[in-house]
Every structure is written in C-alpha cells, then in structure tokens.
Image (cartoon, rainbow, N blue to C red; front, top):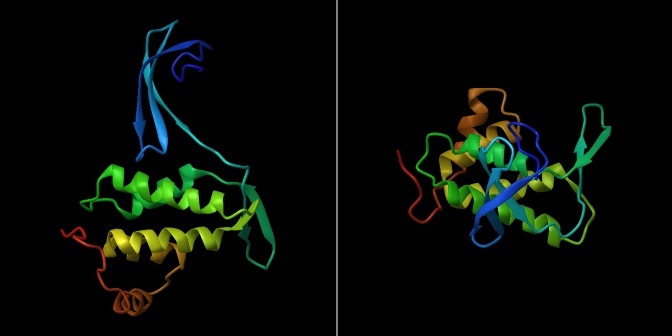
Length: 161
C-alpha cells in the first residue's frame, strides 16, 4: 500500500480489526520509509456498479459508484447531531449492500438517494430533512415547511438536541 505522506510503495500492517459491523476490515499501517502511520479499510465489492445521473435538459451522465460520496452526504446531513460515526458507517454500508445485491450493473442516482433517505428517516428526523433539502432541491422556506410537516420522528430513541 502506497504511503499517503511520502508515496513510498511499501508499508507494513501493524493492526487489523473488523469495522462497520463486520462489513469491512480496518488496518493500521506504517510506512517502511518515513515511518508515518495511516489507516486503510478493506471492503467486499461484489461487482462494478455504474451510477446514472440525470442532467438538466434530460441527458444522462454515468460514473462509477463511489461509497465516499454517500458517506460525505450522510455525514454532512448528520453534522452536529448526536449520531455516532458507527451509525453513519452502518447506514452507508447498508445502502452499498442494497445497490450491490440488486443484481443490476447500473443504478440511477435517485434510487440511491431514496435508499439514503429511508435510512436517515429511521436514524434522525433532522438529518433526514437536511438531506432531503439538498436531494430534492428545496428552493424556498415553504418547501421545508411542507416536507417537515410530513415527517415524524420514527427513529427509536432518535437523536435530540
């Protein structure tokens, strides 16, 4: 594994342990050149998935599935909420698993967005509304009001501020 600090091609695994509810392996590594330590994650990838994104004007763009994009969006929606990192990892792993076991090599971004919304609805109503505001492109305060009116905190023990 290449060192992210000095780009040396050799590093040693110092520690390995299960992560993300046993869906990944977390490895602590040390560069044999500069001695820097860093963490990597190993996950199962069943197949190459292509995400179809709709563009303005009706055209479509395709790009490889990127778990990190989902993780970033969910993390942003959950910012300043009492939600553990492990809960976010479980949600993202669940979405990834759903996409991979669907049997399709291509999936629309809107389907992934709906999976994320379903997960967030169960996790935290505020994070759910935050994600929906971007995903559904709310333009006015009225959009928030209408959507929030349909939301009930269904999370068992949902986070409160």
